Amino acid sequence: MPKKVDVLLITLASPIQIGIYENSQLIRVIESEQKSSDVLPVLFRDILKEYEVQKLLYANGPGSFMAIKIAYIFLKSLSILKNIPLLAADAFYFNENQPIKAIGKLHFVKIASEIKTQKLETVQELHFTLPDVLDYNEFSTTATPLYKIGAVG
Image (cartoon, rainbow, N blue to C red; front, side):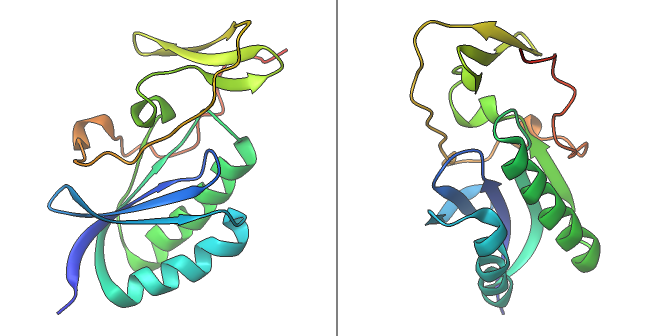
């Protein structure tokens, strides 16, 4: 009988990170430097063979809109086809609430619960981390990508 797990996907920066969680605890990490559009079908084919997936979770932005869009379309399709709930958390949950590069010197920042753009002179290196223990309170069933963020420019 396969283990019942939740699968968390972060595609906002390279490498792509996939965390396999059993009872909220991280039990396996999968990373790939490949394009998410190329590698997600292959990785999830193997994950679905090995585990019984209970929930799909992902970082829905801000970040690379193309990567977010690919992850959302892929996971939403899988969610519908396999009848698996899809949940999302914003990217700040995975990077200790650090600024996220937008364009030029503009960065996304989260102040209280609002995401805004802010000009920062120093560009910080972007690091996203899979949590060791999932806090499901950070995730929402509103899993659409965060596109409604103020104009960048």
